[in-house]
Image 1: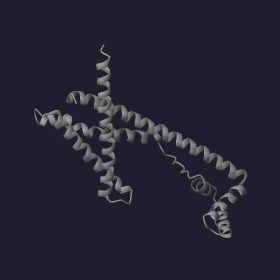
Image 2: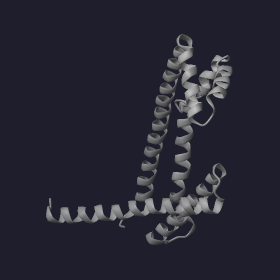
Image 3: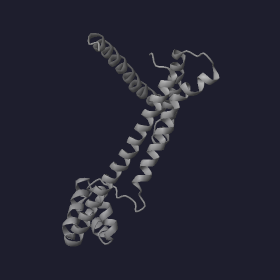
Image 4: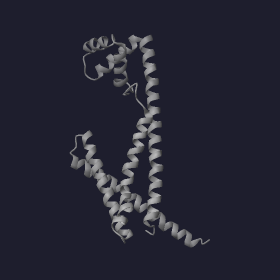
Length: 210
């Protein structure tokens, strides 16, 4: 394109910071909303257990019976659990409502901050080529800078995918390549969308001169 390295850095940094703030705030708000929903359901389950324990016990018996446990054994298991109120309610939240009760020290703001910082760190890496390469190699063309930035981005995507394998059963190579392909597809789509918008804009301004 016609944008110089300085302009790309300014636009890139501004976009990354704005996106990082958006992601961090979004993570915080969504976590707070989820926690409030879970706590609301928890209060409802506590009230139902305290006021209608037989109904709650029957629901759990039906649940375990539907999963293949004989009703007689399900009744024994559930009635035993019902002797321990908090334990029984936690199990109901997980088994019946598929909700995980947040810990007492759960901090949505902290999770949002981690998201913000992570987005900043990995978002700035592709800009390293534009920031450092001109200092190391005088006279580097814009095309070369673009290629360097693409190479750094692809490397970061692979590293992130490989790291993600620690939390899955996939090998680090497969996870890295998968993340690389998906990220590259997204970046390519964004790049060509920009080219199309640029072309349409040039045609519009050419047809409607000021």
